[in-house]
Image (cartoon, rainbow, N blue to C red; front, top):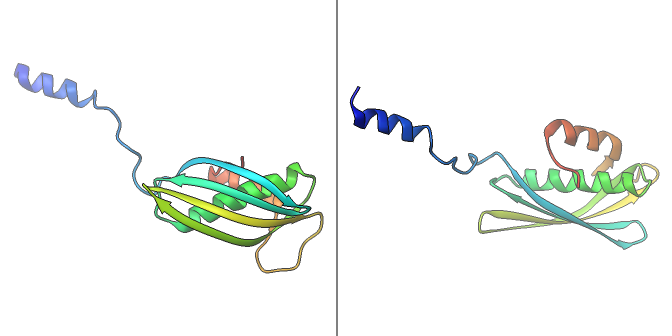
Length: 125
């Protein structure tokens, strides 16, 4: 082997890793805030995705964990607003939390959702 080929092979193994491929979400953090009684605001940030459902799922995971922390078993999604800037999606969601199953279409069984989030690798806090 030539010295140039050996040097090229050595350098190829030393390349700095690039960004994760698009589609492998980068969960950049969340914040929760109790608005009033059983009304909760959840804000999440996600990079490296173009899938709005990833943002919504992250917010659901955080809301479910928050409900459990507050001693409630359920949450109901009220609304989510999303925006993307500089490759980072932000989700601003509102949920109600309650001890019993609330009425509505987007209800969340907090224990089940938190368990599924752990299996899916989605953080809950």
